Image (cartoon, rainbow over all chains, first blue to last red; front, side):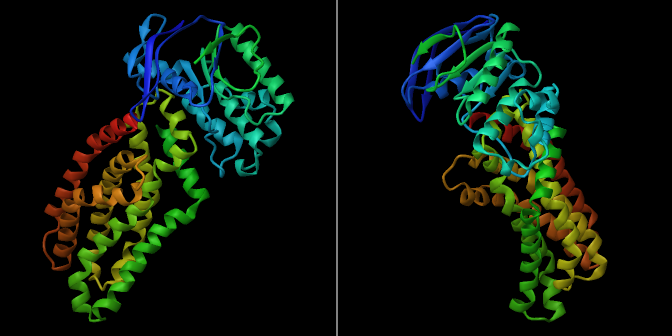
Amino acid sequence: MLAADELAARRGGRVVFAGLSLRAEPGEALLLLGPNGAGKSTLLRVLAGLLRPAAGNLSWEGEEIALDPAAHGARTRYLGHQDAIKPAMTPAEDLAFWARLRGGDPGAALAALGLSALAGLPCRTLSAGQRRRLALARLLLGDAPLWLLDEPTLGLDTASVARLGTLLAAHRARGGIVLAATHLPLPLPGARELPL
Amino acid sequence: MIAVFLRELRLALRHPAEALAAVLFFVIVCALFPFGVGPSPEALARLAPGALVTAALLAALLPLDRLFAAEAEDGSLDLLLTTGLPPAALAGAKAAAHWAVTGVPLILATPVAAALLALPTEAWGVAILALGLASAVLSLLGTVGAALTLGARRGGVLLPLLVLPLAVPVVIFAAGAIEAASAGGEARPFLLLLAAFLAGALPLTPLAAGAALREG
């Protein structure tokens, strides 16, 4: 279980949010909603361990996350705004690299996002939606329980959104937790909403 | 950590222009000295040790400001930092990759640069050793500088200002070693001091760079 108590975050001296508490049980999905600048991305970065909270507690199964960043890294998959793709590498090479750090099967991850046919092309030739799918494929490497998604469907076509829906459902069926910030409708049935 | 290092090498091979630019800069700077100082071999040989070391260090600085900036811009740095890989290990891998991609080609180009500066051939071996050690120290110090200036608006300007003063001892010992070798003296003490500097920087700089990355 992921638990946050009285969390506060600052960006450039400005308080983005304060007094935020949330709970996420295995299998649950949380949608972070709010206008631009409400702190959705900042909250995801705090939960991912990329940003230290200005105040408050963050724990996983009752254990403080900051005490063991390596364990938190192993259980977390973070999908940022950017796709973190090197134009000169191919999708297969990209996933093979992340699989060396994360474990898992790069071929299966490519297939799950329908990228097998593009595996050998340099990423600079991929479209925006295809690049987003490659970034999503990294979530599948190494079976992590906590997925933090920042606008996961940005640039995806309807078929890919449906594919993502299947993956999200499978992840939750395995007891995984999904936290997603979005302005677009997401295929997350039964997700709780968290207004920021 | 090895995975990060190998990925850097692969990326460098796909974009060889960056590494080549540093080597060409090194050779061209050394080629300019005979025009400025005049072609007299004695005058050139007097300047050669200092000119070689300075040109090599400045060349190695060139690709440093992109070391973490490129990763930060495309979001890769965030992903790398969320893998649970210690930031110090990431910084260590980056420093090693910088040396392999920039330092090693500089070492290979040393005989060419030494010939342009009329350095006596018996000092070439020492020059290669001294530049190898000096460029390794600079890769380590530069990684700290790159991590510290990450996100600073004028990072590319700030970086040499931070790193070059720290590299002063490296210049002194490396130039001293080459000078001693070309004058027929003993270069070993200088090389040992350089190696000691490297041994000190090796464990400390990745920790410092890692701490800077975590705060960034």
